Length: 138
Image (tube, rainbow, N blue to C red; front, side):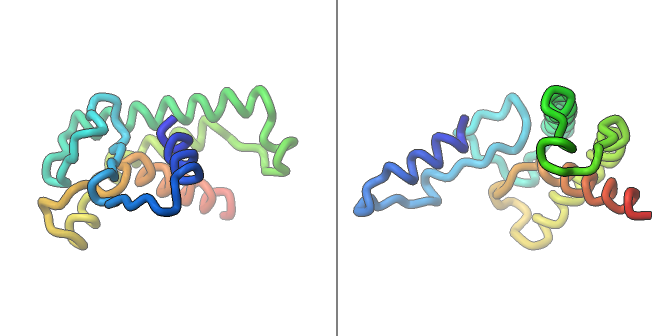
């Protein structure tokens, strides 16, 4: 688990250790095939990369639903009952658009051929959760 390794590494590192974050930083764009050692630029992201991100997002949503069936988020955390099928439909329906919009925004704020600085996975997830919350409130 990369996040666990990062957390443990940060906790166990010597205070005198000097690290250049720009050298060691790697961004997981959210697909299964891009090696973490490869730095992609925004203008190098292809439709197959995006399709893999969407598939990984679908797998995550399925896992999220399965865990809820086992532990019941509503009971465990005091949340409202989640309509997983509707949430998944909303997120996946606009996923490609959200990814493209996120890339465009990054390219507008950065140089077009700059390195990808954040995972593509969260663009559709955040947009979809916000849309789901809006639908619940109306």
